[in-house]
Image 1 (tube, rainbow, N blue to C red):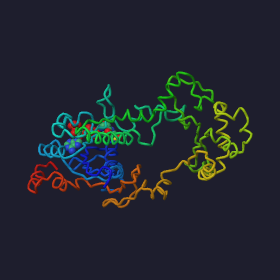
Image 2 (cartoon, protein in one colour; image 1 turned 30 degrees about the vertical axis):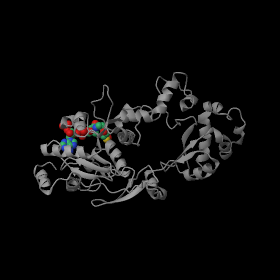
Image 3 (tube, rainbow, N blue to C red; image 1 turned 180 degrees about the horizontal axis):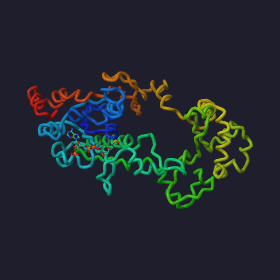
Length: 415
Ligand code: CAO
């Protein structure tokens, strides 16, 4: 028994945003049936290929715990099979370009006629408005949602982040919407439409920058480095480098070995509550009582000097030593961990956050496991399906077609 046992998902998703959502639902126990175009499949199967002839890591890492059914939904027989799937499933998830489902003949109205309990969940690049018909990929969403304009350094161009907040972030929003709609359906008996636009998802994650946009109207943002550097603010929330987005100033500081190791850095937060400990650790006990340093407001115009002094200390330690010294003193610090270090970290393997999976075409590989841990719904990560691996199984046991009907479906070219 898993949290979503018994829930059937008609998974029409591709690339990253939608598959993130359905993979999470699969981890939580739903039966996820991924519908793919015969002979082609999800485009990511063959993108960024590293093992010739095998599904790419891009695909496998987004499609665990799913079954694959090939179906040409533009073929008449294929449409009939899709109708049966819609009647059979609880949730349909898609992230096609705007209008693609309508063009296929499956508008929301038609889906409701076929199954009034159906929850129809979509990722789109934009919500209603001037850009609603646009196709969108991750970095477009990061740019249009406020992420890029507020990321990077003041003297450089806008930057996108490696965290896939537009795709994977929006996929998570969609999953929350679906689970809420499933709960509401237990009261109303009706399905509903769930929409998660990528621009909305990114902006939602950038809320502290919208906060700062409004604070800017009332004066300079004193916790930003540019304030202590005397650089005037413009009209919009500026890029803030590695400044902390909260009320406790923080920076990325060099650690021992930074000259050769690009990740020999630590994040260091000068939390007000532990200022005394910080002064002792960095060898500046006199700052504890000095009115120029003793209080958070007094420190704001001096952040460059303060972090410069702290960095003189962190440069004498490795990023791990900084952790070991600061953690017992309650000083919040964090090492900059590389992907290599994360992949090799035993505790992340133990917790199921990084998982090794075996695949018939590519052998063993690493993937991320479920980031949510539940005491009564354990997650086992199972490998992604090969294209059409479960077509016959689904036609026979989920849709209850007879052997002769399955033969006819195959002969029609629908699967
Ligand atoms: N059988 C028959 N046709 C199928 C099919 C199937 N099983 N599955 C898909 N198709 C068809 C669609 O109906 C569509 O046909 P039309 O153009 O004739 O309507 C066609 O395949 C292509 O679909 P698409 O437009 O969604 O795909 P694309 O590669 O051109 O665009 C993307 C990809 C991601 C830009 C677009 O889907 C999109 O904007 N999605 C919404 C936003 C989103 O999720 N973006 C994140 C992607 S991850 O970075």
